[in-house]
Amino acid sequence: MVHETFYVEIHPIHPAMNYRPLLSATLFVSLAPLHAEDPTSVSDAGRWSKEQVQGERPAVVTPPGHTTAAKPGAAPSDAIVFFDGKDLSKWKGRGRKDGNDAAKWLVKEGYMEVQRGTGVIQTRDQIEGDCQWHIEWCTPAEVKGNSQGRGNSGVFIGGYPEVQVLDSFQNDTYPDGQASSLYMKSVALVNASRGPGQWQTYDVICIREKKGAEGKVIQPGSITVLHNGIVTQFAVQEGGKQGAGGLQLQDHGNPVRYRNIWARKLVVPSVAAPGK
Ligand code: MG
Image (cartoon, rainbow, N blue to C red; front, side):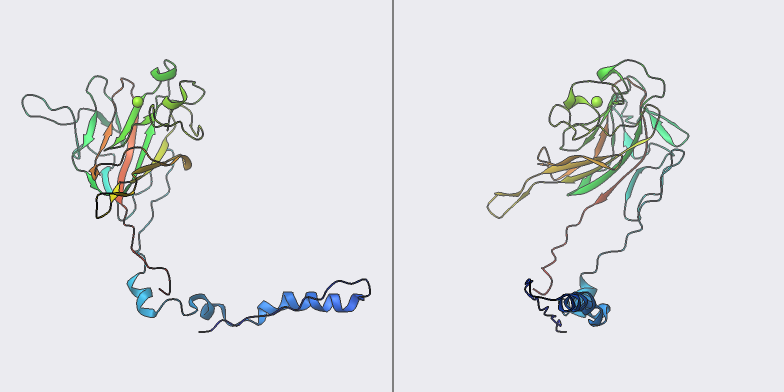
């Protein structure tokens, strides 16, 4: 397929030029694209062979369902679900002497809630390589305490700093300790907090460090965070040195709730530039 090229003749504007040629030039410019070939045949324009289109066509994924305050949307079709509101079978807590390492947080009405003093809980499985995590959380509707003492918990994706969970709605604290900051590492770009008692979301994109043939870092580890759909950390080069990691949730003594936790492996395809 060969592109048809349109040449537009531009007439110099000269005081001697009368009104009529200027009008006809304008019409020519605006109408010319309408005479182009059928746009469907122009779209591939020979840059991709039929075989390439079939071979490199992105996998079809059913996206997440719509989330409401009352109910989270379904996880996307290629997600690994870690908590769907029913039980903590995919989580473990502090191991005890008798070998029982069950997570001791409360599960109720589709969410889990920190039980003060029971300690952090973590996923039994890890995700290998680059990944995307979705976590929904809610700080107590009844506001108690201030600064770091209000609705404090935290999200730790293996090998990265804590993504702080805090009631940061009209609650000042040190900026690198507020919600969606990487604790003591990186201040959130904005404060996108919803009020206490409202469900909030984190979507976290973890890129793990890659090394070339001679052990040289060719891609640094980085973390990107969206808080309630707003970018709050963008490709911050903190962590990501280990190849895999699970998710750990912090018991900071406040009854913070979590629901709808899933992850996806990110596969960055080695697609050559079209036509190469
Ligand atoms: Mg915390």
